[in-house]
Length: 194
Image 1 (cartoon, rainbow, N blue to C red):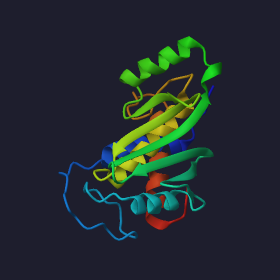
Image 2 (spheres, rainbow, N blue to C red):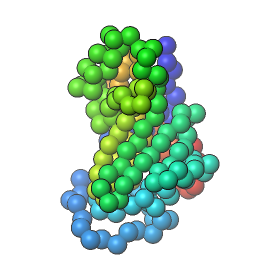
Image 3 (cartoon, rainbow, N blue to C red):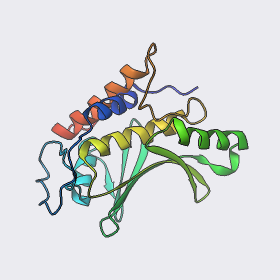
Image 4 (cartoon, rainbow, N blue to C red):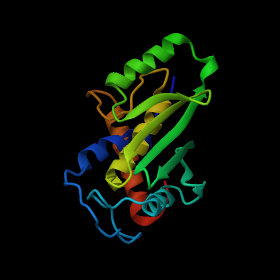
């Protein structure tokens, strides 16, 4: 059975609560990289993604048009294409050849109702947890929520198949999600890492 860290469970809940409702902005200059969380769409760039990622994990590395970093000992990847205005957060789960068909079916069912913005996906012989979003309209909170949902969906594959966004009361999950979200938000504010 998977044990979710308090950090992973906390991130999603707070991101949803803090998600911006602002209208998309066009032709805005990018914010300074040391700016606080940007909640207006239209600001996200590859450089801004890199700054947020380095705040989460100071040991993150640049790989081509993306980054590799760790969240609670899970390797996370971000790939972006400014020309196509897309970005993707992904983390590997398991080789596809070892997954029973019923678990693949269950992951498709979870894509419909439980993993929300993250998705289970297959590529290059691997099962992945993935979050895809247009780059320019991505806000800092959207990005942090995407990181959290992707990590939680990967951790819960084979058990609850959830991205952790909506948790129905009575258990520990809500508190654990909130803790991770707070740690990620704190890391993006003060460069401590998580």
